[in-house]
Amino acid sequence: MNYKIPTDPNILYSYMNMILRDRYSSLEEFCAVNDADADKIKDILKEAGYTYDPELNQFR
Image (cartoon, rainbow, N blue to C red):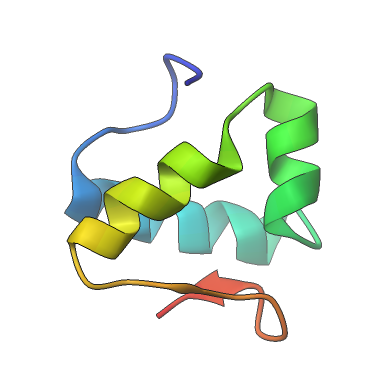
């Protein structure tokens, strides 16, 4: 995972929703541009009770 991406689930949740809202049309686009692992991000956030909604382009 990119070193700039937070690993704390609560910070990651806020970070991902902000970055997806402001800069990227999808989680896949974000991961391609930043060489990040979508499954790892989803796993970290799933442990904290969040799932990705592609229609809304955010974690909920």
